[in-house]
Length: 311
View 1 (tube, rainbow, N blue to C red):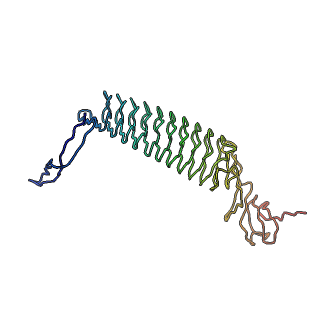
View 2 (cartoon, rainbow, N blue to C red):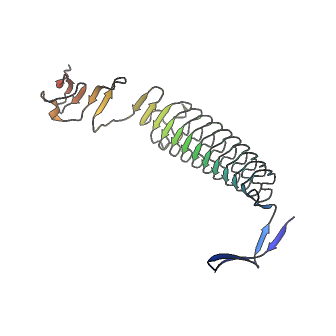
View 3 (cartoon, one colour):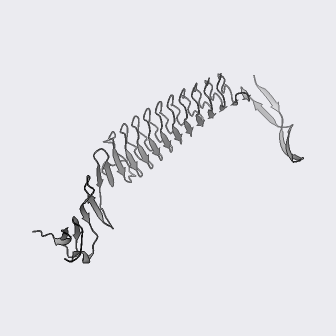
C-alpha cells in the first residue's frame, strides 16, 4: 500500500527570552513514503526503506537507510547501514558501518567492520575488524579479519587472509589467503596469492607472476609494465634469511661499517675518499678499508694505514 503525503517544510528559528524555539509549518510540497518508516526512539533505532530492519528484535542504536538494508538483523547493535541491500544478511553482527549499495550484503555475524565504496566487502560473512575503502575493495573477503584495504579493487580476491594492509589501486589484488602482508602503491603485491609476511613498496612492486606464493620477502621498486612485479627489484630482502640485496649501484656518502653480530665490534669499515687518510702517521681504527685517489687499497692495522699489495 502506498500513501502519498503532500506538504512543505519550513523550519525557522525564533528567539524568545534567550531560548530557541523551532516551528514546523507543513504545506504545499510532496513527500512520499513507501514501505517501512520506523523511528524507534525507545531502542534508538532508525529504519528507513522498504523492509529495512524489518526483523529487528532486540538490536538497538542501529541506523538502516535503503531498501532491504539490515533486513535480517535480529540482535545486532550499533550498526550503520546506508544503501540498498547494505548489511542485508546481518543478524547478530555489531558495530559495523556499511556505506554504499550492497556493501556488507552477506555479512551475518562479522563485527566492527567499515566498508565504504560500491560493493565493498559484499561477500564478507564472519570477518571482523576489517576496513575496506574503495570500489570493490575486499569484495571476496568472507572470514578474513583485521585487514585494511584502501583503493579501488584493493584486496578484491582476499577470502580468509588476515592482518594485511593494502594501499593503492589494485594493491594486493590477487591475494586470497596470504596473511600479514603490507603492499603500498598502485598494483603493489598484485601477483601475491598465498604468500605471507611480505612488504612491497612502490608502483607495481612485489613478486612476479612466476613466484606468487613467496613469504617473508621485501620488494622496493617501481614497475609500471603489466603483469607487474619483479623478483629482482632495486631493493630485495629475505626476512627469514636476514638477507638484503641491492640490484644496482650502491653509493655511500658517509662511512659504511660492518659489525660483528655478537660483539658489535667493527669488522670492516669503508671510509670516504680523503688523501690525508693514507699517510703513515694518520691514526685509524683497525678494520677500516680505504681506496685512495692513487687507485690503491689501504687497510688499517694496529692503528695505522697499510697498503694492500696486489699482483
